Length: 88
Image (cartoon, rainbow, N blue to C red; front, side, top):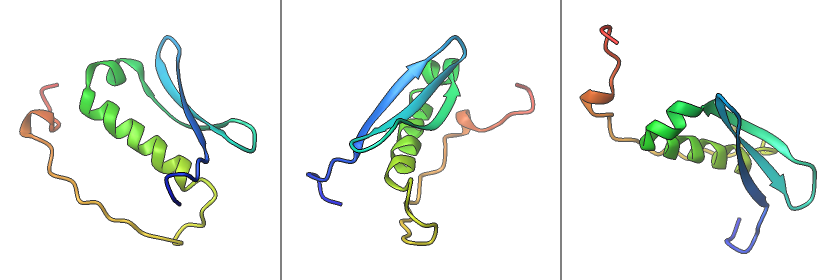
């Protein structure tokens, strides 16, 4: 897929508790992709970036057969301050 091959737009909407991403394809009806808790989206820039990345990957791979292609992108470990603590 080249940069000139537009497949649609991502549309972000929110309600009282969640942010939702929909894909508006250039050639069809709107498709729901994913949602996230609104306070998490607003308060955690790192998670907001991952959420948008997830929505983008879901849009690109929407009609692709699983196993059709594989792209592994290793991530750096999260800092200790982001890890789960039983004291939370």
